[in-house]
Image (cartoon, rainbow, N blue to C red; front, side, top):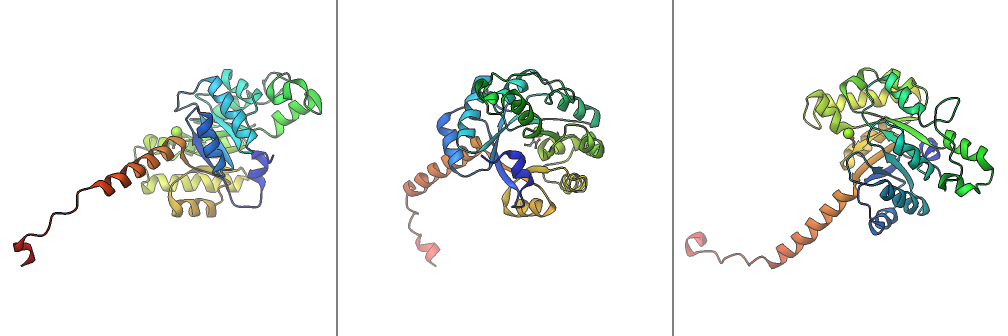
Length: 268
Ligand code: 3PY
Ligand code: MG
């Protein structure tokens, strides 16, 4: 299977993924079958248990869809388990500055670069049978896993160069929703749009893979042209909502009473 890191390096267009919030294997198979390159299992904004995340990691990776996990905060606890369960990468939300970025990423690197612990007897180590043994488990954890800092605060935009240069940062993801809140601007305002563009440009200049959340063809094209290496479009709950509403609306339209015949006056 192509790793997420290989997708970021590929000369094809950006990798396209979606957020996953529903802990159902049926939904995972439906979303996986749609052909996304990767998914981000979202523990920051969805009530997913560690066990839910584990099931989703297994299903998506078995389908050849690289599964990343957005963790709830900068803490080590659950992230260690997600990595040992085979997550292709970790997204750390609300990274405000370079110092925070370095401190968060150290937890997801093995010594001497960081403090991640040895868990060779885990799924990531193929339950202790990985060809190449513990050394390969450590190599894959160090080199294949992608550690992504989320840029979604005014302060992170101001400190973008330091975040991009922080040890262990393999990519940055710009969150326009929280960025607009932090900037006190409505979503999609020109100021937010320009801040996202400035971060993308800084990342491209620094040679750090960058991604953002996009909506609609024009935005997808624009952010790809600007150099984004990965794009997130929507999420599973949004897709289900849209399909449910469309299905209900089709029936409503079909069952609507026919328009009343025009009155004599209206006929003139
Ligand atoms: C944001 O826009 O705030 C995000 O976290 C991206 O989904
Ligand atoms: Mg956010």
